[in-house]
Amino acid sequence: MIQGQLEVFFQKYYHVCLRVAFTMVKNQADAEDIAQEVLLRLLLYQPEFKNAEHEKAWMIRTAMNLSKDLLKSKWHTSTVGMEAMPKTGEPYLQGVGLEIDDTLEAVLELSERYRDCLYLFYYEDYSIREIARILEVPQNTVKTNLKRGREALRQKLLERR
Image (tube, rainbow, N blue to C red; front, side):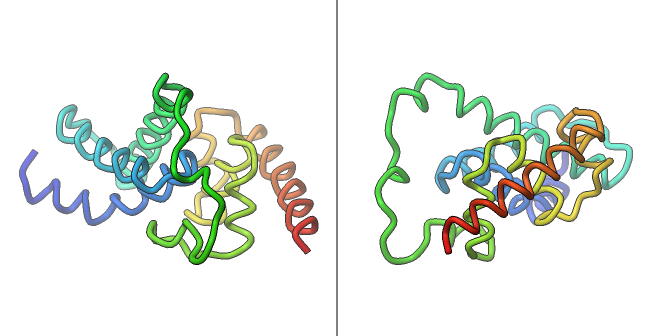
């Protein structure tokens, strides 16, 4: 892969991968590591993409898989990170390029299946069909998770008021 191509991928997808990873690991440093690892894997494996949609889906799927791997790792399950500290002052979401609001914080607190579907649908503007392909689940599962996730999100937001 030519250096210029890698720079284009970095400019197009680094922040997308960072946001996707952050929604899963909830730690900016780990999310940055994952976003960089996605680009390293792109450089290492040099996959052939059918189109821009396939390219973006590969990047997101890779970021999600690396995030899941980190969450399952022995290091992650046996340590307590700085994010476990109580929040004071500026919200911890500030550095990842996401607009900080109560809704996003509530989405990040949902279970993984609801969080992923809601985030990809509302924050990354993917269709149900595209989300199903990225998450490798049936479209009806995505629809169900969106419906249940919206209800869980509504409950969370009502509890905060």
